[in-house]
Amino acid sequence: MKNKRRFAMVSVAVIVVALLLEAGILKYVNDANAYRVSKVLLDRVVTVLDKNDQSEEELIESLKDDYIVRAKAVSYIVDAKPQVENDVEELQKIAKLMSVDEIHLFDETGRITSGSVPKYFGYSFDSGTQMSYFKPMLTDKSLTMCQDVTPNTSEGKAMMYAITWNEAGTMMVQVGLKPQRLLDELKQNEVSTVVSDMPVYNGMEIYVADADTGLIKGATACDKIGKTFNNLGIPTDIKESDKPTVRQVSVNGTGCRCVIRRDDKYIVAVTIERSFYMTNSVVAMLLVGIYLVLASCCMMYLFSKIMKEKYEKERLLYTSNTDELTGCLNRHAYETDINKLALKKEWIYISLDLNSLKHVNDTYGHAAGDEMICAAVACMMSSFGEFGRVYRIGGDEFAVIITQKPDELDAMKNEFDSSVAGWRGKLVDSMSISYGCVSSLEEDWEHVYDIAKEADRRMYASKSRYYSDSGIDRRK
Image (cartoon, rainbow, N blue to C red; front, side, top):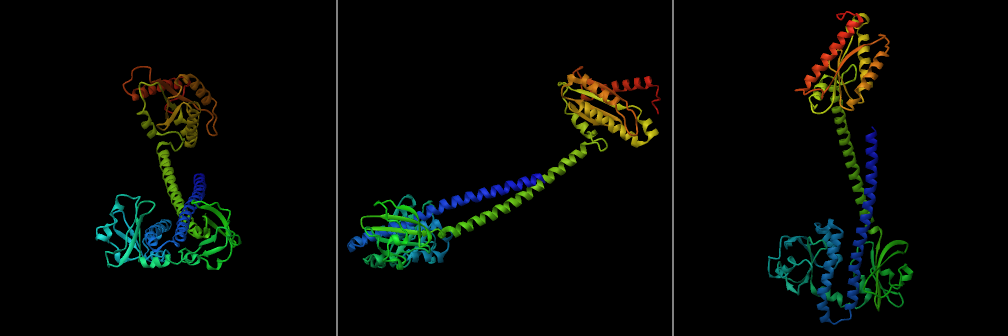
């Protein structure tokens, strides 16, 4: 029971530590993913704003950069939410949010395994000239590629495709767009129009403000246009830099993680509500908690079963090696132990036998005889138990094998003699035990049983002297 309670307490402690560790890991991963997604969106906003004033020819060339940014953005989103990898409907939603016509996910061999257009599944870089353009991606995972306007392999329609490896290098993410569609978007010079069309998930917002006044000129939340960053709680004391700054802010009372970047014209901010990834974290922790509880229950069950089997095994071993009446070792244990003894090492064999047990049984009954047998074992255990093992090998026949401090045998014998002589029972008032001692180093013995026989001989000699001196009829 104590082991079970201790195991349960350890299990609870492990679960708590595991959940705390998971919470820390999830926070780190979510913060990192949120930063990457925010940075991609922020970079895209800055890129779009910078490109709005360029000529049409420059805009066409900039399509490639923009497409690659979109491909990376999709890659980050898929990495952040791996459950959408094989979900066509969700990938179609992402395509819509990212303002791309197609999303294709390639495996490491260059074959389309998933995407927003199922009819393209199975196509590979070997499927045609248009797709073979991307074969260098297979040998260099640092590449990002964007193709000029080219008729696609499947239907021959004019498309531009951009492709990039995901962060783990386990798949390639490709986006495809009809070039005229994006050109029309890029030609819109109004900041409010540009920003309002930016794709974001619920809980994410993009704001663009004038660098000098902090007045919001464009936002994905149109009702915020015309207000200032100070009104929303977004800081404006950001130094001009290409590197984004991360701040924890409260926008209209809602806690957000804010990634901000400033240049000479604009301050661009991307906010993500903390609840954006809190739900997934709670679900993940709940699932892990349930798993750990179930695992602990299973382990506790197995632990209990193992302990029960161990207890049963020990109990059976104890029963098979223990004399039922006296609690000392029995004949079975004696035979096992004596055959393990080495003749070259020093140990003492003592053969013992109760005197007049038959007389006690006949006169006072077997209960008195059992009392005397138990008393004899108690005296042996008291005097010899610390240095060796005590065995009952017959009705009133005993053996003691001393393996520790055999040089103190005389002190042990004196204590044993005093203990026997001073014993008084409820049914019997005295007890006498004859014994014979033999050392394993007395001579060169051929077998351990030769030592036992010699000890028996000396014990019987002692018994004969007892009956001769006491005048008691041995047969009684």
